[in-house]
Length: 474
Image 1: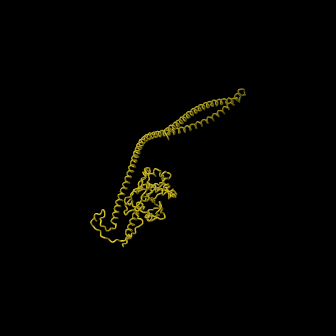
Image 2: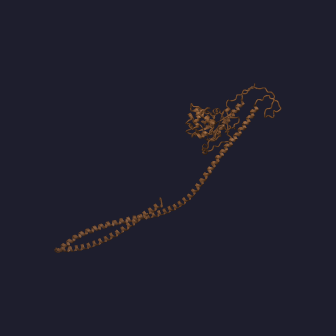
Image 3: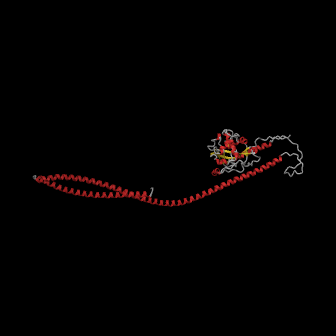
């Protein structure tokens, strides 16, 4: 039953049919009484005719013995009429039998109607019970709806409060991230300064001492003491053309170059929705590597931005299932991540790279810093999702340093085979005619094993070089 209104409608229909059945039964009873009365009248008339006929028959027999007279003729006519009456009586008896059959049929139908009425009454009672139950359920549902409405209002309030708390936590988290970034940068600068100072002290101690009467500046121990003459020796050093790391210590991190500019606030806002990547503190994530070192221990060549190593995997790449990695330089990509696990951008998309990363790709990222003797050294930042994003508008271009602007104008001339000079190309960037293509770098993971494996290879390389310095004394 869909609703109480449907139940009431069905109940009224049942009651209407019941009333019709009762009225039909009463009408049939009246017809039966009338038929019985009519039958009794016919029976009485038939008895009268029979008696009259018997009387006439007796008189006719007496008259047949007597001479015929006009009365006899009358009696004969009456006899014929009696035959007709008998025929009528027979017809009436047949009709009476038919009436009896009809009465029996009506009685049988009445019994069936009575049974149907009783069944309908039972159905009505059942429907009334169902209606009462439905009304009870409806009242309970109304109470439940009212309770749910109050609970829903409370839930909306809780959700709103949670959203406000979430926004506050996100803002606090962003501040903590920025503080952590600044703290890590300060610590890395301090470590660099300390390491550089130690390297300078070591270098000073290794300088060849010459015979001077004067005291070296800053030396208290040598005051008033002559240096004994020493026989000089010819030294031939077999130093590698490329140091696999930036300095002797794996903990060093280069200073932030002067050409690095901060990522605009609108670009950084996208990072808030990205999940944070946790990096172990003991995986030497600040080690620096040359392109040659990466090619020797991961695979690929030393030139392209995207290094594909499917067919040239080294042991580390095969073990860690590495098929490619990126090597952008920080000098022309000042928005690249400088700390492992950070997000950033790179300016890629000139010439043959125009449509690169239109479909997002996943690569391990090594960012190139400027090391000693202007050597490019690369730091592992993590595994990144790389995808094309909006190019730089003129406001963001203007915020870049002249070093980056001039360098990118020169890169544009080379990559696009532009015959104009770099000043004209930069002018097009300055007035917005050209726009710097931009690619989003979203950190999604960090391979601690890759960082450790490369650091172990660095130590092995340094021990091998130190054990065979190639020094010849003359």
